[in-house]
Length: 110
Image (cartoon, rainbow, N blue to C red; front, top):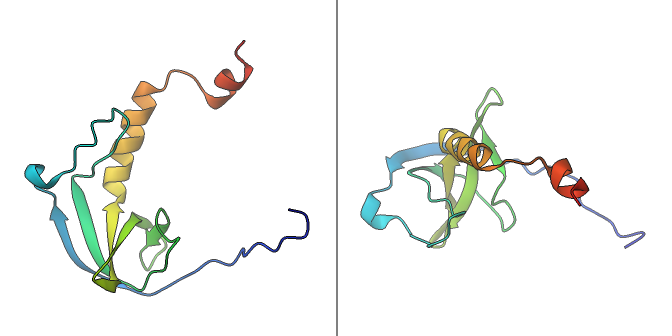
């Protein structure tokens, strides 16, 4: 809407990595969807999060993205889970292999 204020401030919070682990095959969720993504690894981070942070980047002390925030722990809002950047790179590679058209090709096709 015209005149509607949008918060354009970035949120930053300091945290630390607690644990990195691989998700056992029997614990992975099968969505049955060909476009679903189940990471093989997760990183547990102690860092305060708020609703809306999911999908945001987590960076290290030199500014490199180490992962994407996937979810907060419902029992402890100070603990959250990241999908490591290495897993994201695998997903992007998989998506690129399946994509045969660019967004512009899709837009202009008749």
